[in-house]
Image 1 (cartoon, rainbow, N blue to C red):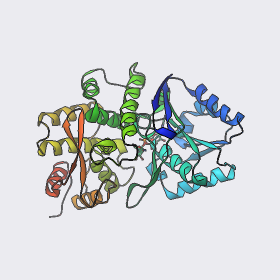
Image 2: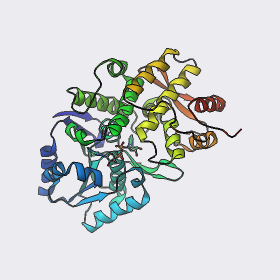
Image 3: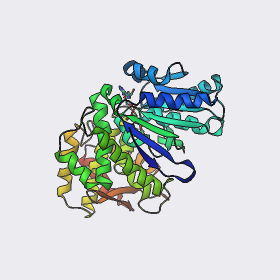
Length: 364
Ligand SMILES: NC(=O)c1ccc[n+]([C@@H]2O[C@H](COP(=O)([O-])OP(=O)(O)OC[C@H]3O[C@@H](n4cnc5c(N)ncnc54)[C@H](O)[C@@H]3O)[C@@H](O)[C@H]2O)c1
């Protein structure tokens, strides 16, 4: 197991990565219980089905709330289920909850931990690639509402993250690819050498000997960005750069309906759109479009909308995104492959053209 520190003043924590970490998680939970702290676990039904022995090995008979899988679980209804479960098991201010799952379980459980008793401790035990390289790091938690994704939430840093690469063995291939979209994003925004590895070295898979190292490299990219701008308040750049591809991606998810495309798949389409936007604004050379398309296709990720979506709805959804500042659309673009920048005041007609090129439709 290797550990990486996320330095955030009063709430710093470690990200532990490696293979076979259920014993380490068990001893963390045991230590809490030995000190008299109550603990609970939140997970989803797919994980219980596929990783039951890991779950039992790490958590034994610790009370476990099993939620339905999928994006729609990130809702007020399931926030309530979590809080009621914590109350039923008499969790108090010294208690801790373990989020054992993908980004959905991590975001929901972290938010429930932030609001239950005005805040209790939580641990992230990510079980998807996306959660290992992205959502479990950085402390953003929340749920979706019909008006948009993640519109309700809180910053709540975990006590620690344990990323056991072996858990990826049961992850469906499509979900693994969706996680690769965030890995590709990190390469595009901050690490050109990582992007080159993704473009040219062996295709990564859960058993690949470099997998743990790649996950660590991604956590380190995200951690250093979060350390510099924890609450995304930097005027330019900063944590907002992690949203590369997301202004487009979130609009696709909202208009197509949550769960139609996986989050990482929507982000993949968004990454290519962000590259095309950067080319149109003459920030990067046209050849980058083919390079990004190549890497996305290598991991079976979509590069255009699989079925037509309404242009007007996509444009409307973008204006509702959290990343809108003072009413103007804000994008993340590329200054080079491996270096991102924030872009304000983009001409909406350019964005419309990019959507149409990607398969959006307009009645006019
Ligand atoms: N908080 C953040 O900073 C942040 C960053 C990126 C994404 N997100 C959020 O993360 C969510 C997407 O996360 P995700 O892609 O992990 O989706 P997910 O949590 O829905 O998991 C994907 C699917 O895989 C199943 N699964 C999980 N682990 C498994 C395993 N080991 N074996 C077999 N099946 C398994 C789940 O049941 C689910 O069906 C989105 O809601 C997105 O908004 C948050």
